[in-house]
Image (tube, rainbow, N blue to C red; front, side, top):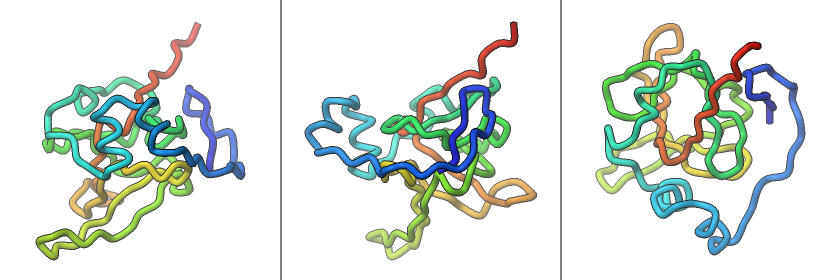
Length: 150
């Protein structure tokens, strides 16, 4: 994992243990929607949250383990109703895996590298230069605004 402080400063690559908890503990730590999304791979309804409208400087951290996933610099308005990012804060902090849906469509699931929380999906219809759209469920994120300079 690559660690970041709340200002977005890269603290370097670190080896950390995977976060593993019993399902009963995840249920206690998360609200029902967060649990459904992160542990049961469900999806928030579009436009149901507020983070897709957040444009202030900050970090988006995993709701389950607190690892930094996305920087607000990579966030953009995709018009989909979900927070969307062109790139992760560090590729080491995410994992992707192909999914086979009931309709036989293939999707690329995005998960947290540390706790294996389901975050959302990545698509190839994003802005240049990456052309990627990390479409992330709000229930899987915690926004931390950059501290104000004093």
